[in-house]
Structure formats: C-alpha cells, structure tokens
Amino acid sequence: MRTRTSVAIMVSAALGAALLFNSAKAGDDQGFKPLFNGKNLKGWKTFLKKSDLANPEKGIVVKNGEIQVSGFPFGYFYTEKSYKNYVVRFSWRYPKDQPEKTTMNSGLLVHIQLPHQVWPKSVEPQGRYKDHGKIYFPGWPKDSKEKKETTFDEAAQKKALKPSHEWNTTEATVRADGSLSVSINGIPVSTGKTSLTSGPIGFQAEGARIHFKDIKIKLLD
Image (cartoon, rainbow, N blue to C red; front, side, top):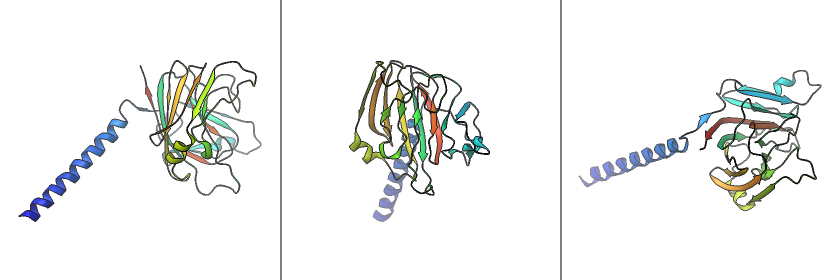
C-alpha cells in the first residue's frame, strides 16, 4: 500500500511540475505576436548591398520555418512597419559549417532611420557572438552630439550564452523615451539610452551564416 501511495504521490508531483512548467512557458509568451510567420517574408523588406552575386536575393531566404541569412551580400531585412515602445524576442544560431575564419557576426537593429544603407543610422544590440547583446550605434556621425549611453555586463553575457550553433534567445525591451535593455536566454546583459525613439526593426546580413526563428513582438502601453 505504501509503495502504491508513494508512486501515486510521485506521479501527481510530476504532473503538477509539468503543468507549472507549461503554464510558465505560456505566460512567457503572453502578449507576444509573431513578426515572422514561419512561411515567407510577408511584412518584411530587404536592403542588400549591390553585389556581383548571381542571385543576391538568395542571401536571405525562408526555409524550415527559419529566416536563413547567408551573410552576403551585406545588408539587412526589416519590418515594413515602424515601432516604438515594445519588446522584441527572437531565437538565433550560427550553423556549424561556417567558412574558415568566419567572424560570427550579425545584429538586431532598432529605430532604423532613412536613408537605407548597409549600416543605417539605428541602435544595434550586437549580434556578433563574442559580444552579443552589447549596444552599438551604426550609421551615426562620429561627431554626433545626440544622446548615446550604454552599459554592458560582460560576465553576465558570458554566463548567458549557449554555444553559437545552439538556439539562443535574445530579447530587447525598447521604450518610447529612447531607453532599451537587452537580455540573453533570460539574463539581463545591457542597457542603453538614445535620442532615437521609433523606427523599423531589422536583422543584419554581415558576412556570416545565421538563422533566425520565433521573431515576436509585444507592444507596451
């Protein structure tokens, strides 16, 4: 009788834990809506550097429910809509079979400004593996006096990262007052503050093969 009771308790506990896990997982997604439908680039545009590649459009393709970026030509894909005050979440990985000496490089771009160019004026939570999550300001004039403040916790970043070929999840909270914060796999790694407050969201093609999936957004009040 005791054995049966113990087994029943263990099964009940396991089921309870599973329910709590699934509930927490569902709660994590509460309020998020997909930016990428897993089938095509509907809702997105691309900007790619003029190239002598035969089919430059093949540099960014949808396959197996992922957006697969070859890294060439340089450029980015970006949302047709502009956003402010939101959380963007996405999963990414660098495939193992990279060409020799490839720097695993890409980036999330927020507040993209016109004109479109290889490195548009924007705010970039870095996608390069070694300093992923650190905030940069591509496309800004070197003598710009516009507000640019950042913090970066390198120790937390090293702890948060999984191996580059495994799926990692990055989340950026972007506020209408120009502030932003970045986490990797649930661990906060950086913050920033800028004069930019809105614009499209993009992801870079920057010389390395990288895959993206589960790109989602949650609009904030």
